[in-house]
Image 1: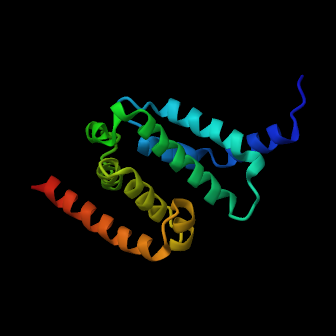
Image 2 (image 1 turned 120 degrees about the vertical axis):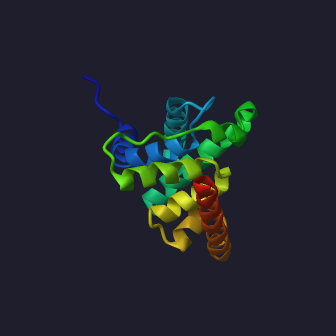
Length: 166
C-alpha cells in the first residue's frame, strides 16, 4: 500500500471537502461540447498544479472558486468552437416530484446557463451567499463593480424569466 505524500494528502482532503463547489461550477459551465467530466478533471489538474503556490492569504474556498471558475472560462476560450452560445441549448430537467421549488430551481439554472462566463460566475457566487468583497477577490473585479454587475444580472435574469412566461 502506497503512503501518500503531504501534498497528496492535502490535495485529497481539499478536493474531498470542496467537491460540491467544484461540481457546481463545472455543471454551470458544462454543456454540449464541454463535458462536465472534462471540466472537472481540468479543475482538479489545475488545483494540483497550484497547490504548492497557495499561500493562505485568501480563504481556501475563495481559492477553490477562483481556480474552478478561471479553469472553466479558460477551457471555453481554448475550445472556442464550443463558445458560450452553444450553452443556450443546455437545459436542466426537474425531477417528477411536482415540487414547485425544484421547478423554480431548474428554471433558474436554465436562465443562468444562458449568461456569459463572468456573469455566470458572479451570480453563482452571490447565490452561494458570498460577500461582495470575496466575490471581488475570486473574480478580480472591484467590489463596486461586483455590486453594479450583480444588479444588472438580476435585472437581466428577471427579464429572461418574464420572457419565458409570455
